[in-house]
Image (tube, rainbow, N blue to C red; front, side, top):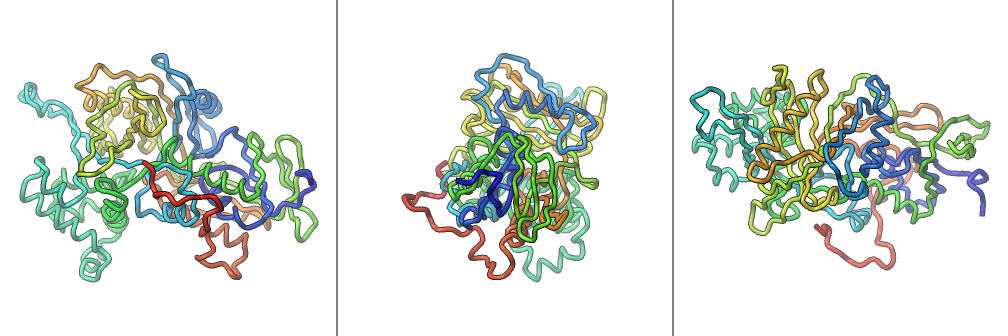
Length: 505
């Protein structure tokens, strides 16, 4: 058998993030010689899910406040004893996947879905602060509350919070969105395509501030100022995804760590196809060769030098025109059952839900009010990310000088509101950090044989635009001649695989 140094590799892939892993999946039955390395000791790259031991080490590595990479200002707080570190899987960049997502389509056509257990994402909620003023002190309005956002006709009609006239306006908008690309509807919104969705909702559908916040939350916009066109696309995706794989939910989440599971499945498929994997192995040097076929010498961190025709790797630098998110991941000793109720007959019990804190709804101890929405993705133990009796709360908002303190207040408010009937909830462990992301996906050819996947998009719902660079990389590697949709991530079952349902959860 040839040694790694003696082998003429068709491609070296560096990093096991989502894009590199899907690229490996796409090449898994190509018969090419693939070497896949990662400097970390775990799979997933930017989308990794870490046990507490790895999270501690990761935070120490990314503690700098001024780092040029994709993560900075990481710190860990332990406020109570926790069970075994290996009982946890903390996702660095959790994202839900809408059931109409192209990612699910590709996982099905490639047969990779058989190795992933998907679970339902439940309702979206909006946090409503307590009413101000002494006259409300003894009333129900004085308490902060969580309002569930209606996403279907039945939800709207059954709501006891929305007045009848407002229900008619909301129903009119939902009907409009479901067919927004048709000519009559397009004539209404296209002249305002780049304007604020909130203004459009007010002027065209007479939606008040509360209903506007409901609709904006369904877009999961990080800055809360989404355009009409982008907002209609996002809301249409959410509404059209409702009920695709069962009643009562529009999105799913991979058990055991979210997208990190997709990364591992892609890498596993490539390994079955003959790819060689080396974790804890990075790249220290790249040298062009005077060879038309084998173009690069790559020095690995173990001092081994390998030869390859091409190299694909992930970006390690924050983009100049990107966006920074402040994130806080908290393990709490409460289950918050009110957030995980099935909302339709026959619907599965959700394992994840989203709570939005609209712009201006959170104020820190210094009187600073939130300039951007804050989102909390709450995961029960059914996700496999924490032990029974606990939840993991992933909070995120656009980075500002006060974003860290605002996340602290949002977390405290959520615990007081969602767990107010249980024993006092406490935070067992908290990981805080800032993460950089791109505003658009990209693929950069930096020299003849080396290509870089750009930084990830940090949307809370997986954006299918992230798949485009993977497709472009596959086409560039395989050659455009003879490349068709039927050949891209469309595989037959391997021998010995039985027919299963798409979703186990």
